[in-house]
Image 1 (tube, helix red, strand yellow):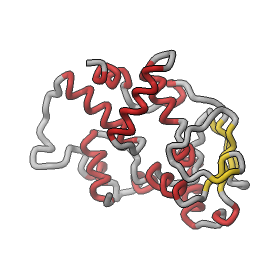
Image 2 (cartoon, rainbow, N blue to C red):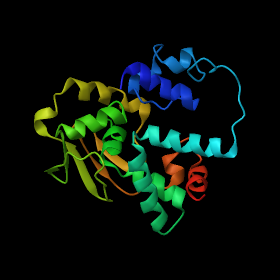
Image 3 (cartoon, rainbow, N blue to C red):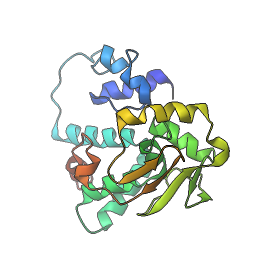
Image 4 (cartoon, rainbow, N blue to C red):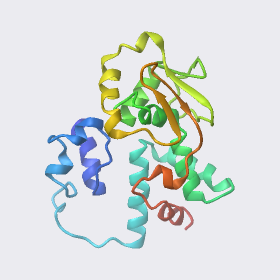
Length: 206
């Protein structure tokens, strides 16, 4: 997917999804220059139906985490079978993905880049190499960068953005050792994404 097409996703959802990492904080951000939906009728106001609002919310979450439709449906199915609030459980499962955690820890500038980092075998979980982006982390799992990749320029550039992005409460990161801990599964309030997960539940409950 090109930079241009990725930026169109943010414009379609009407908000920054930070799919290009630090680029989204610069004057090159397409959403800053054209904060309306792409296409011939993008600047026209439209009234969404209830279904349209639910669908947009699902698309927003799916795109934030970089999932295909089949993957997203699988996560929702798992969440719906677990005890607790389905919408919150869904977000928790997505936050437990290894690629998401690599991004949150500052080892990649975006979730998209984090998937590449994991697939290229740069990440260890509990001292064992894991190259599956969807790997589910548990409380107490240790995530670290493989020794031979610690001088990677992309990794260093990403770590420079971490102070501004901040480290979530459920993670602990040692930027010197390039390692961290997934301390616990976060609550919905801790995740603090601008999404209404209940709309997704309503969409799949029809």
